Image (cartoon, rainbow, N blue to C red; front, side, top):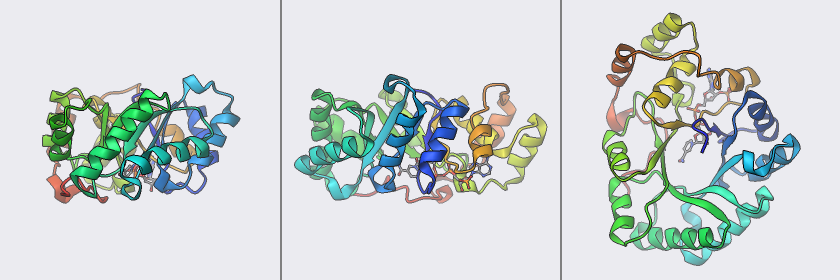
Length: 259
Ligand SMILES: NC(=O)c1ccc[n+]([C@@H]2O[C@H](COP(=O)([O-])OP(=O)(O)OC[C@H]3O[C@@H](n4cnc5c(N)ncnc54)[C@H](OP(=O)(O)O)[C@@H]3O)[C@@H](O)[C@H]2O)c1
């Protein structure tokens, strides 16, 4: 899985943006049924001329489609919309609707994986309680947990759990939905002669997360991918780490605590 992904939530020019992302070097696209743009992701993959094997596609099903049969149908719907034979990673988008439906949904994704429609099965917005349910049911560990992660919202207990159990942590909203006006981001951007967005993405990569920045702006799509010619030192990382506000720092729904 390429460590940097390209998020397409609320991107109203997804086809063009994904093509720009491919030109910038991204090979990992993060979509979802709820974003209503799987078809645009699929059309961009085809127009790009890239081999299917060279592109990593993630999609997700929301709680409306939870339950065994509904989830199997949801997988087929995503494959049709994307017009691909498999998705690389399929996530349960959120943990709403309770234990029974979560486990049914997860079992359906494992069966879709056995059928070759999904390469890896993961979850999103799962707290420790939800991850423990999967373990207690004796089911395969999810490959990925995709959660909100940036310096203001570090979700340390969930990250520690994921590390302990070999679950890859993907960081959504890594640019704090564009709210990057904190003086420390500006100071570090000036120091490294980079943009605040690049500072946040380096922070995420250096913590071992897989960030999924979104942009519909071609110049930002390009600059958000230029991350490998500088690094933050220990002091930079420590100061960014100190901004953690726990759950109060979240800027999205972040439903990791639902029953
Ligand atoms: N699993 C989940 O529940 C969940 C929830 C939220 C997000 N996600 C995933 O994570 C992805 C990213 O999260 P997000 O979309 O919430 O927010 P984000 O990536 O943190 O921030 C996107 C915002 O930052 C702006 N931006 C991008 N690059 C910038 C730059 N270099 N300088 C200044 N502003 C910049 C964008 O504006 P422009 O587009 O105008 O450039 C947009 O307003 C989503 O697209 C989605 O794939 C998943």
